[in-house]
Image (cartoon, rainbow over all chains, first blue to last red; front, side, top):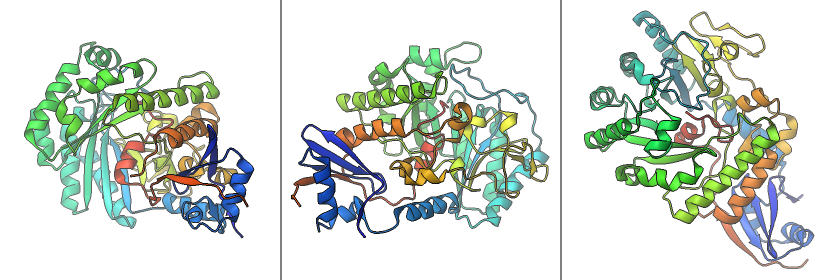
Length: 419
Length: 36
């Protein structure tokens, strides 16, 4: 029997209604201001478009959604490992979230590195993975460049199909280092630039308080002259303190970053974790997201407007994504990195489970599927998938429906374009 | 049933499997994203 999709949302815009469906990512505008008429028409019309676009359905949608989620949860096409090369960092970003439970001057010997690499190879081979994606993470991973090169070499020798990238502040990405990394097949980098010189240096100073903005731009220039095959992702962390200067930030980026097809610019609305209530956090996040979209649209900035999506993230995969440090500790969320209480297990000590409150079904199963049954019934489940593990741990609340409704209404009525 | 005129605004018609790039970009979860 034909039913209206659970994943529809209806938004009144002047005398019309915009209907969007988050399962199919589709939207239509209908010439009526009567919601009941609209729903009846969707149900009774023989127009095949409505089924194709997901607005009506004669299948059991919740079961289908559960299957879809489980497929993503258990997907083993790519093994994603965020390898935490060090907890140490040469910058002191104002907003750094990482806890300092570890010795930052740790020394990792070749023997330990071999154990880590062997574990990665073994984990890859015991699954049905087609490819390994290795993300070098930290602290600042380039402080351990020699160890990175060692890992890279060993994985290469194993014959595994893999690719790798580095999430770096860019300070040590000088010509000498980039040549070494390129020679080992590392050609993709995420570098964060938070504003013009003044803003960036305020938010992301060196540990000793020095400026690093000019140095990062100098490094970017050197990189672009070295190879055309490099992929640079510039990340701009936007919050209340710098969103008004998005234009300035963008215009201060070198042209080769703006226009090279290998490169991309990622505007990340990072706001909320430190708000003192969950509702305030959702409101702040909704406001900043809408402000950023508006700024991008008004200024014709060459940045795609993409609405929020919760997954895939390590929390939403069973064993195909996790964070791993060089002590052998694993985390299922980047927000927990450096927090000893949140370690799931240690791969160097026979997968020893370190925290009894982290449920684990077997040695390699580091994540737990905590999606509530009621979540599958929610219109926003296709983009939320039960939410964010990190946020639920700090807020004891996780449902972001209110925020998602606000930003998706805005997205589908103002910014969504056929691609 | 009253017929209602409509216009399709958006249909990305994408598969549910996100690209690796999306994983990379979304790994911190967009809503709860961490400022790395």
